[in-house]
Image (cartoon, rainbow, N blue to C red; front, side, top):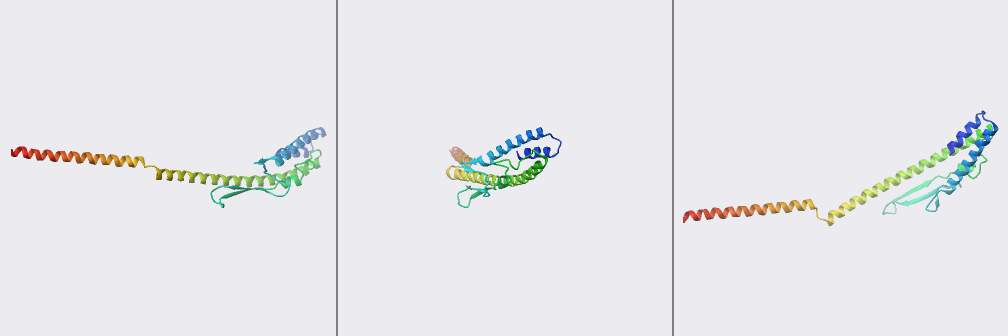
Amino acid sequence: MLQRVRQLAVQSSSGTYSTADRTNMQSEVTSLSAEMNNIVTGTQFNGNNLFSTTGTAATFNIQAGANASDAVTLTSASLSTLATANLVGGAANLLVDTTAHATTTIANVDAALAQVNATSAGLGAGESELSAAVNNLTSGATNLTAARSRIQDTDYSAASTQLSKAQILSQASTAMIAQANQSAQGVLSLLK
């Protein structure tokens, strides 16, 4: 939305538009400002405002493991530039009705865009940190489940191999005993 406001301000500052065109542009800018205000003041997660325009950053501590030290802290930087420049909560500094006002709006929007980009980068870093914590916890849970399975269950393939080996040895022993008995009986029959 800030990009669209900037685009309209650049168009208005060019001096090629009529007063009626600038009035239409101002109408769109006013609507965009109201929507930005709704987003900044109304975006919540679990009842907590994600953004602040008071100068204090919104901080969220998220437990990401079994220990107290396994926490991820997300900080949403204050969007105070938006409030200070009156880009949300009003449209006094978002005027595109004259070339001079449009030039001022471009500067105000550029400052606000820099702050929004910094906030976005901070939240993106926090998201990456949370993703890494989730991946680590998932890997740990998988390894723990595998270890538990090995402890509780018999390794079926190893047990099957041992059973087959025992059966083969038993059959071989039986065959050798039968062969030995036949040899002894053959010698006895010759002696008779």
